[in-house]
Length: 117
Image 1 (cartoon, rainbow, N blue to C red):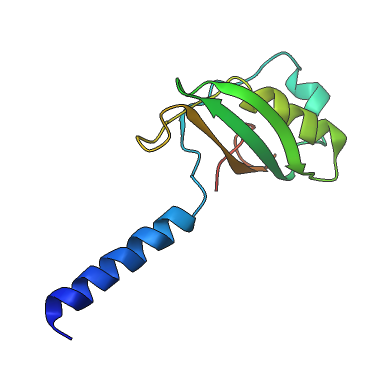
Image 2: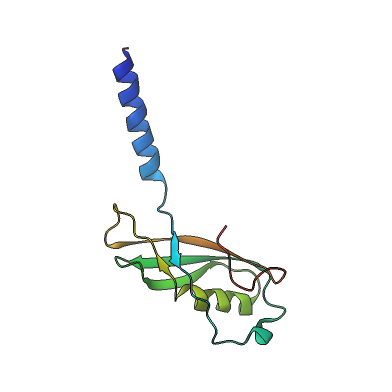
């Protein structure tokens, strides 16, 4: 087997591996959601929530739901309210949008805004 055959096989393998990976949600704009006072969230700002987010071709959230609960209904609701206002990058290979899971970690020891691991 010559070198070009090996390289072609590797390229096909890399393309198959990347095609098998789910698309990644990359936030571009994460405005802070403020319809609930910070004091009302006190005691509900620590945990991890996984959201399932569907994004349209413009990067706007078309639908969002809790895929994995934090175990705290207030935190889950806060995560859902927050992510609905975010905007995401739309990859060139998904011009009509995409759907994927988005893990979010909240910590009251840091800034009260969610972080994306």
